Image 1 (cartoon, helix red, strand yellow):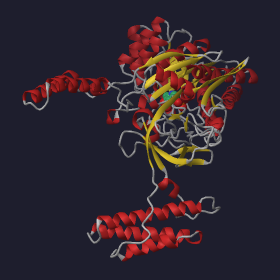
Image 2 (cartoon, rainbow, N blue to C red):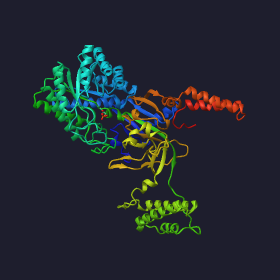
Image 3 (cartoon, rainbow, N blue to C red):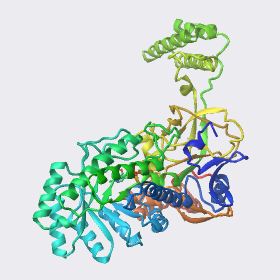
Length: 625
Ligand code: PLP
């Protein structure tokens, strides 16, 4: 468990059982309910589904929603806060219908609503929200159609709030509202001076692309006053960015925004809601620090800090305690999904031993390299690696100029890798590793080929160097003996996982077990429920993976709530505008021509066409026979 730090990043949802398998667990009054992910994998295989599979565990979604609301409830109670808390789920974080349905169902006891950033997201929110008290926050750039949709929804009884993100939106909202005779609730998104540190925080600060500057806010208030519509202004909103690792940044933004809120109340707007956007971070590496993959606070501290800060500012001005809204996305859905894939193959960098004696006539540089190899000892590791790199580079140059043969170059490369491997072995366990030798472990690490696509399933690892917890799902009762990076099957040099979580930063290799013959080896990438599914693309035409959702019951049994088949080859081809009928026709024509030219028999024609048909209907990932 320590090797993969599971107890620190899993928030108690995942652990390892005595059989060495990763389990999902939760606590009930009767004790712990535990299910092995390997058991679920067996269930998936028995149902005839292939890997990779995205596994969703509904219980986790339910429990994250409860945790957020219960933490706010406790903080509200502890500080004697007189307002309420309302959560909204930003649809952009995971737009899958099934996810929205479950959030709506589990969230209804807390009036959990949605944040929509486009017309499509608004329509999705309207279709799945069941609770009339839940809020629908309309963010994003709005045209008159978007506004009309929200106004009609207001007429139907939905609690929509239009957030003005750009000064020009106000006129359009005023015009459409008058035309459709609806008095909408509106909010204003502001640019804060407070800026948070972190990977994903570009949306904050003075230069953020969305939101009104304070002079623009004042102009908006004047316009609403002039139009007799200030009574529509109900909410103040900001979003400084996602995954804010430092609680100090959260506090400072809340304080600044609440000051603006009190200013708007003083201006005569009814207000009542203050929406602090997203940002509540997930501790991906389990380090509990302000490193960008982590956070230096708990959800309880996050809620307490917000309540306390808002209260201190509004009390000072004798203003009623507003309803606090947050748009937490990552926190709600990240834990809920695990990407599971099988390993297809391994490449090892274990060079064959060099010959005992060099062949006659080899170049002097090759002889020097060989001598370096023979004289290598613990005392001259640094010097040996320096010399080896120098000779190898010189030999490569000679090869480029045609001065040595392919065989001699291969021999030299082999000697070089033997030196590297000896240096690595002899430096293991040394207290002070010379700089030249650091990184050798990475150069020598294995490559495990995983049946998945980074670009489809883990796009943030490629786009913004996000790290997720990655680990084998079984055989954890024995120590893994290999260090590896993981390559996907896209044949793109960026299609790999080569940064892994570590409590002290990040590490460049992952401990994995040796493969055992034909036995499958399963690896899980955890905490992938936020952003990854939606941002994923069709690189190499690898499509959506199969998705399985389970619900685990208190007696330890579980059922498959839903099985969504991933894309077939025909599906992904049609996404990129191929005409599948044309492809089928073309295959038939080619086969018929081959028959007429006696290159294949009619029987062969049938089996070739069947293979092509099966190819179109098949899964886009590697399928084992
Ligand atoms: N609200 C807005 C306006 C956003 O742009 C985002 C995402 O960046 C969120 C909420 C969700 O943030 P998080 O996933 O950090 O909760």
